[in-house]
Length: 185
Image (cartoon, rainbow, N blue to C red; front, side):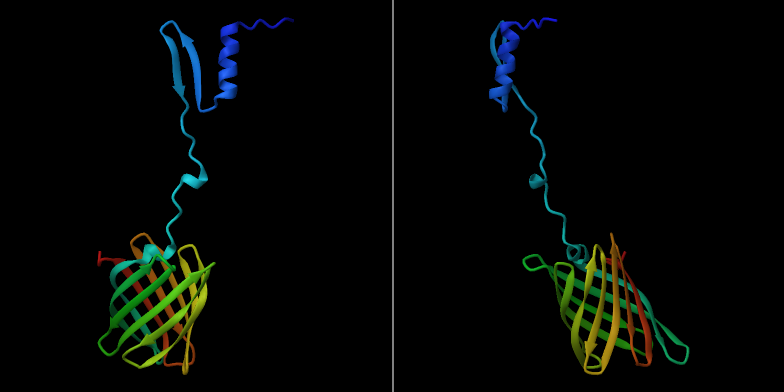
């Protein structure tokens, strides 16, 4: 079997081999440049947004506070989250009230390699402490600790909805459950 290669096709082959950015072909009108399509690389794609960024903004909603003695009251809540892009931080303020209870929670946390840590304070009961936990995707599981307070925390954010659950240990509060919508929608 013999291989027939014309000089024209050999020139195109050489041009493709030595000039990967632009292939050149001869036409009756003269040389024609055929640009190649750029190829998107992983380095050219924007990095995914940090999960804290999805929490930024104003939220409102409600929930419940469950107390010992089968007491349960509905809560009305507002929250503001500020995301710090430079250091993957989140500052939050949550205010909730029922007919008989009120709390104002403030916290500043940072995320490093999936670990969440920071501080919290509650103005109405004048307590404060530290937060530590893990972040996986849009879920945070943490523990808030203070001198006389220990609670498990769970936060899940999906689009314009956020669920927050706080389960204190060894107090008359059994659980606080809050559901927020972004901007009060």
